[in-house]
Image (cartoon, helix red, strand yellow):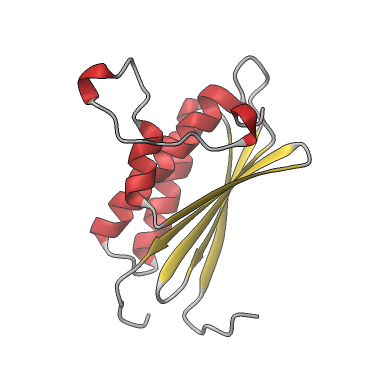
Length: 147
């Protein structure tokens, strides 16, 4: 057990559709703000979450019935941990895309998301667990007042 008295956990679930994903991301952002996360940092989290979840909707569930996406959030005094679970297709080769810096003019439609996610998070990890995917994101947080 962590023993952190400031720990605040919550889970948001929604179907992997564009509309429900957008609503789910907004729900996560609203909960984080209510729990005291600064609006600026919440904006960073929302952007990274939108990019990651958009990839689940567009790629993990491409050509198959949209399933559930579960977003588990753990807000601690010094960081925010987010775990995104889905039961869609695995990442190509079972690995995260590199997210290397790219020249925007060279980009096709899309292609900037993983670079952007990596710029906004402090740690990222992908695992294929059985028939599901788990993407873990960690955001370091500046000291914040106790709730």
